[in-house]
Image 1 (tube, rainbow, N blue to C red):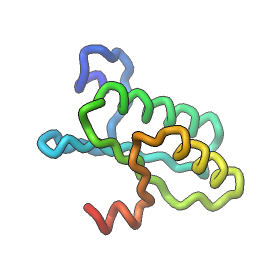
Image 2: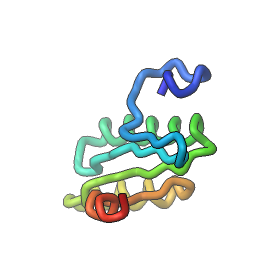
Image 3: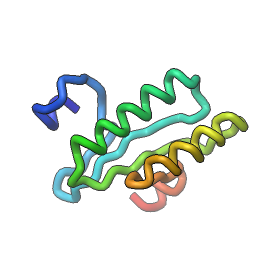
Length: 94
C-alpha cells in the first residue's frame, strides 16, 4: 500500500489491483482468529481510504463457523462502501 500512496507508511499488500479499471482486491478469511480478522479489516479500511477513487472488492471463502459468519455479517454491514464477493462469485465475475 505504501507504493500506491505517499500518505501511508504502512507496509501491507493489496492482493490485486487494476489501475486502468480502478479496482482493488483484498482477501479476508473470516474463519481465522479474531486477531487476524481485526488486522485484515484494518487493512481493508485503510485501502478503502487511500484508494477512495477505486472500487474495492473484499474476496472471502464462505465462513463455516458460527462465529465467523457473525463477524462476516457484522463487517459487511459496517463497511457498506466495499463490495464483498465469495471466491466462487469472484472467479465467475473476473
